[in-house]
Length: 321
Image (cartoon, rainbow, N blue to C red; front, side):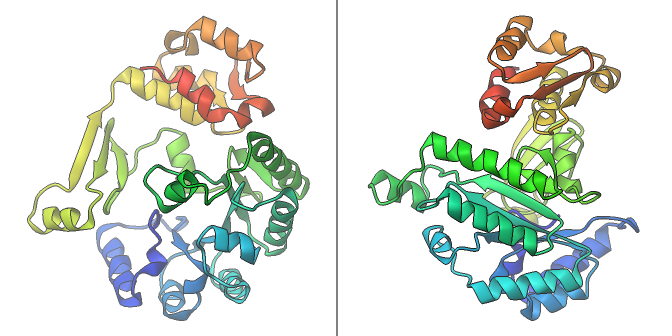
């Protein structure tokens, strides 16, 4: 998976070199899923030619919205024509493509969001990722909101948008398989499921986070510091944490709760040697059930529909290593 950062912003020659390094260091499985994140304004063009000549077979396209005014409020400057051209490229060149969409943005409305989803469905995308706009401290959006220049959607609008998302996309035949993710049959995102299942993964690049042999690590976020470390033969890791068995098990629970089917408690016990009650207090589980946030049976733990709206809060309550 190339992304988190948007690799389509690279010069075409640089992306070609990067893909060559992947080929040099990794033997890709015949049926692998090889994804790249891209902005609509970068496709097709030179980047498109590099993608077409590579083994990339899945594209995650950051459309964000089909509404021009909404895109402007998100500081995204791609045009309707660029979106259309990028989607057509994805149809022709990728075995599968996904669209990223944002709801509860400044000046957003339920009508605009409904139109966004309908256009996304009409695009032929096999996967949709839908996110509520989050504003992080220190960003341009944060400063604008702090000075009253950016209206903040209320909680009722956010909840209404999310529930509309679930109803609209599942009615259209997409599988709601993770809190923010919807897919046609056989088109779930493989790399995201790696995280939610607690599996290991390498990570390369500034700010990238990996998990290998119970060690979670994060590389230098500064590009210059990252390059300086790598070119001098030193480790590019800035932070690392050796996870305890209990922390790993708790992560397995909270990440598993992101999946709509939830946590298979039989497999959970077989793979970890622990029961849910060994790591999560009975009283907390009882409280969450009483609040209508989780469903708990002898075989499964999962979020209710109401729990999906408060998923981050529920997971924070559970994850107390």
